[in-house]
Length: 310
Ligand SMILES: Cc1cc2nc3c(=O)[nH]c(=O)nc-3n(C[C@H](O)[C@H](O)[C@H](O)COP(=O)(O)O)c2cc1C
Image 1 (tube, rainbow, N blue to C red):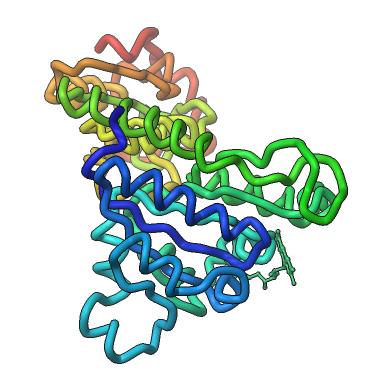
Image 2: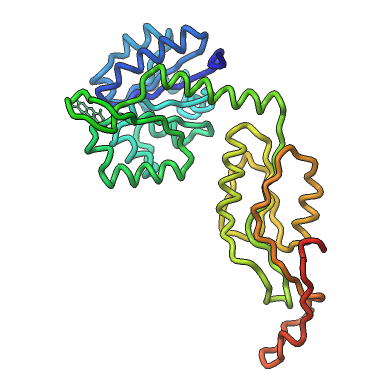
């Protein structure tokens, strides 16, 4: 069992399945985890702060403008405190707010300010779940890196049947066990990873270059996934329009030669993922001055193959 001595922040949303969060709290507490909670305004319609506090033995946070709690623990430190944040149930409305990047109450502000993984546990009527708007939000949130468990298929509180039923507290607990297990394994072994991404440019003259088409997105996503597992990750990137996360050591290079040098500097590693689209050719020399338009450019350059080895 690896869900032990962890700090878990649970945000309880306004859905009928909110009462099940009490069961998860009980399971987590039984295994010596520290649990803090935020109850959304709608969540309060379904469970009371008194029931939650009785189980967590901690204050339940509700209002972002609460002067007493803001001095005790502000929205930034609340997100820093947690090892993982769980939103259960994640309502359709809450998914919309997150996909828009809203920070309109304590729950959404803590999430937007968070540097931790966030596990969303959707629960809603099947029609709400399969609605195009919700599915679009799901895709956006997955792209943003939110983790998901469920929803499951089954009979719902409203009497309808289909996908939208919240995963059970036991299923969530097993998910957490696997999640922290993976993290522990990586931490114990102190894994290091290196990812190359993006194109390289081989200049013919100060303004012209040979390159390969590459957005770099794949490498940035791989680096993000590795660092989320707690792996110390170095990203070596050719010119792209992307911005990497602050906890990923990022080295920007232009040419294949620079990429090779940077890779060598960062070895050895346990995992190397070479996703860069390194140019296959390079001119044998770079002209100091811009080649004239009426000059036959390809006559004046001599292409060498396999630039990546030079
Ligand atoms: C009795 C009742 C049950 C509800 N259950 C759900 C639900 O399971 N899932 C959901 O997405 N919305 C549900 N809603 C609607 C949400 O409560 C509403 O969208 C609310 O604004 C969500 O608040 P939140 O964003 O803080 O989670 C329910 C509403 C009522 C009145």
